[in-house]
Image (cartoon, rainbow, N blue to C red):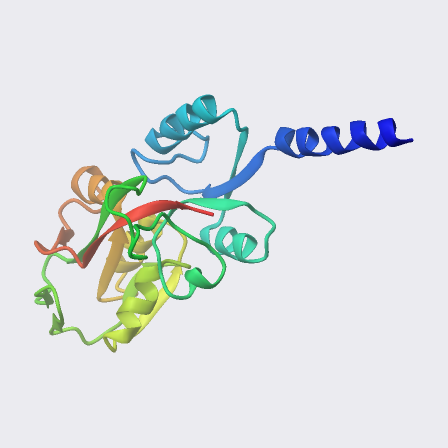
Length: 215
């Protein structure tokens, strides 16, 4: 019996180690970082981490709000490409330095949130406040930028799941501006004939931030 117990005690940690860590990510494209099919630079990096640590990772595409909710509930081990916030600090952690600050250079990557307006709009953003903004601003559901915009007093439409939806809402006059993340929105604004001549991007980003593997 003592031998059997000893064997079981040895097998339990081995069994736990064999279970993959489950990380969710946004199920819409964030070029070049994450794609719904599991390709992208973030996954290239994390597969190298897998190889160097001997861990196994499972990547699960989910709508962003659901992904964050599952991490908060403990149904996922972490999220790929999340921005730190006080709310998320209640259930997840990011790399920190010896003084408890967000550790520089320890994010997966850094990205910009840019302000998009219609080509004939007189809305301005100076890095701190909007001018001539009378209507609402589109932002992606569950993104930290939604709360930041509301703190500025803006009315936010957070019904858009993707950057494309945000640009379409702006094009159809559903909102007066859109604050959208990353290169995907910029590529659509520059190259998609639906948006190229009708939407422009303001010169100053709304904000820039590191994005983490938040666990």
